[in-house]
Structures are given as C-alpha cells and as structure tokens.
Length: 426
RNA sequence: GGAGGGAUGGCCGAGCGGUCUAAGGCGGCUGUCUUGAAAACAGCUGUGGCAGCGAUGUCACCGGGGGUUCGAAUCCCUCUCCCUCCGCCA
Image (cartoon, rainbow, N blue to C red; front, side, top):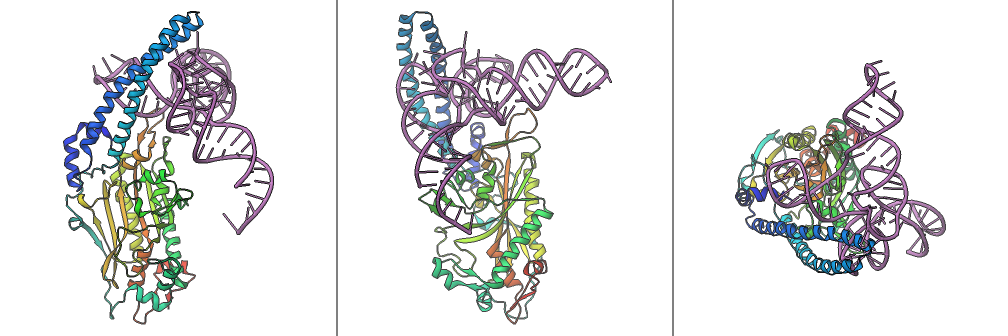
C-alpha cells in the first residue's frame, strides 16, 4: 500500500509510474477523489461530534443541578445531532472501505534506478557467474537422471495426490534435506540470519499483510472448515511476525531465515512446465526476510542478492542475475532481482531466487513500524525478502550439473558432510 | 470435544452509564538536591486521522465488529484470542 500523501501531492508522477509498471488502470484517480471526499466528511462529522461531546457533558451537569427541563430540551436537540452524525459516519465508512480497496489495488512504485521496460523481454542481465562445464556426453534432463537412479518417482506421486506431485526417494530425498540443512547453516553462520520455524497454515489476515489476498486467492489452498490457508511461501508468516507492532529503538536490522514447504495451486500456470519437478503444487524453499531502516533499503537489497548468489557459488553452479524492468515488477516490489541457475539437461536458466525490496509497501499494509530512537515517532520500516534458494530447482541444477556419463551424480563438495559422507549417487 | 474464567496505556492493576481529560503502582525521561550516584521530592511519559507554515485545535482508539443511549471502558449481541480443569493425543 502506498502512502496516500504521495498520491495527493504528486498525482501526475504516480500516474506516470503506473504506466511504467504496466498497470495503467490502477485506481489512482478514484483514490484521489475518495480521499478528498473522506477528508471533507471527516471535517463535518468531527465538528458535530465535538458539539455532541460538549453538550452531553452539559446535560450531565444540568441533571445533577436539578434542571431536568433544560436537560430534556438539550437531549432532544442532541438526538437530532446524533442522527446527522450517524448519516455522516455511515457514508464515511463506505468511503473508507472504497478508499482502502482502491489503495490496495495500486501497485508499488519502482525505485528510480529500475530499468524501464514493458515486459520480461526487457529485463536486464546484470551479471553472470561461472561458465557451463563442457560435457563429453549428451547431458540428460533431471527427470531421466532421477528415474534411472530411483530417486524420483512421478507415477506414485500422481497416484497419491494427482498431477504435479512427485516423490523423492533414497539419496534424492536426502540430497534435498542436505541442501536445506546446509543452506540454513550458511545463512545462519555466515550471513547473520536467525532461524525461524513458522506455521505452514495461516489466517486470511496474515495473507493480506503480504499482499497475497485478496488478489491472488485462486493460487492458494484453503481449508474451509477452520478458514486457514496453506502458505505459498515462508515470506507470508515471517513478514507478518511483527505485524501491528512498533519495534523498539535498536531492533533493526532484523534478518530471518526460514525453511518451509510452499503450497501453490498453480491454476494460472496450467500447462506450463509440466515436465519434471520444476513446478509442483508443493515445494520446499529456504527464505530470507529482512526488516530494515528505510535509509538502508538499497544496500540491504544488494547484500540480500549476494547472500543468495553465495549459495550458487558455493555449489559451483553457473548462474546469472537478472534485474526486473518496471513492466515485470511484482505488484508489491519496488525493485527485484532474480537469480537463475544453469541447468544443462533441460538446457535452460532456472529461476531459483527472487530478491525484492518492498520499501514500506508491505509494512504499511501489515502495519509494521519501528521507533528510530527513544521518544521519537514510529516510522514504517522497509521489508525485503529473497529465496535462498528454492529447492526443487536447485535439486534439478545439481542433478544436471553433476551428472556423469555412467548416469551417476556426484555430490557437490559442500554437501558431502550432510549426505552422511556419500560422494556419489548411483 | 466438554465446563468455567478472562482480555484496560511499555508492564501490573482499579474502574461496572456523565468531573475517565482512565485511579494507583512499576518502568522510562527531565528537573531540584549531590563532587558523582543512590534515595527523596516535583513534573512529564500511548497510537492514529483531519485542519494549520507553526503554536495548536479537533476526532477516534480500554481485544475486533455491531447495537442501546443525549452520553459507553462501563449495558446488550457477536466474533477472535488467552487462561484453568476434564477428555483425547505425537
């Protein structure tokens, strides 16, 4: 959610930015009109309420002073004022709701440095690390490698849960567990994050705080009986940790890392990426979330991206970093970088991390503030998050990068201690 | 799942229709005293909206929402959460 004051004071700038993010129909002008109506109504109803407050006090005095006639006359008068107040309040409630709805549908403004572009074709590759090692055989895609090794089972996954579910077995399951444990350890021990184990099901209000509801409800699994929702990413519970709080001076920055499964219905991407384990309804992810002071936003984004890249570097898998142009920015993001691992078997770059700076957009929505110093007024903080990294795709990249001519897969050096010493999956 | 009890300011806690502009205490800040500190004493100490350059004014907020009333922390309805006991359970 944007600050209405920004729109009020720079309407032309905001309209122009809506063009840049390819959301020309964002209800900016509607919000402006509602804001004006709201303030006008407020001024009127508050004047009436001030009158009612003072006169009600006087009624009390008259009654105690034994002047019930005067009190009754005043009561009748205030009853009429009360009716007027009710009319204004009813109208104000409607206007408030409409304004909130309009504001909820206006996307974040991109940072000044974000390249302008209409869609993903104008995203910018900002750097590439490593070079694909040459193969002296034809590298195979992970679904072939995994099935041949007996560590991936698609058919039984479908039997249990339907399409887009699969099983990892034996050293495949262990490899994923090793990746999770190792990635968490790197972020905790070397990047300064503290680990969080959050609930995997949350209430609607929590999803609203991160912007997943109401706009993206169709991508979420929903338990109707208890009205709980399965999380689509750890970003949801972790960002909401400090919802409706004012963090005391000295709290920031806060870095959290969490491993959770993620659940997505993927109705919007039906038919895409059906092969392999690239896009399932359930996947695992290690997620980094930061709460920082506004002044540190961009520097924190840079270090967040580097923390994610570090995982790829340590795995010795070539990757590239792509900056989203204005037209491809997510709804809530002010700036966003993706990290893509090279997968030689499927012959494509796999998005394994998405690192975003939200500025105060989420903080405003979730009402997360901090007090810069003792006695100072609370300010909205800045939130950031990034995958570090998303699992099935890292698994794909490992299997395809480390595959050998005989169909076996070498275990990356950093993971061997987490694999009970196993150096090769065969 | 059953029965009962609760939710008030940073914390504890009073308040049960009008001086609530929320008692009192703790904590915090400032000042007096002191070489300094402690103690004592005095004052200050929530969040947000709107109007204003500002001083300031005004409104709202006692778990959330709705209602009764001239007037609600206080009465009524409803939801959420917490606690205690019983049952069940990894």
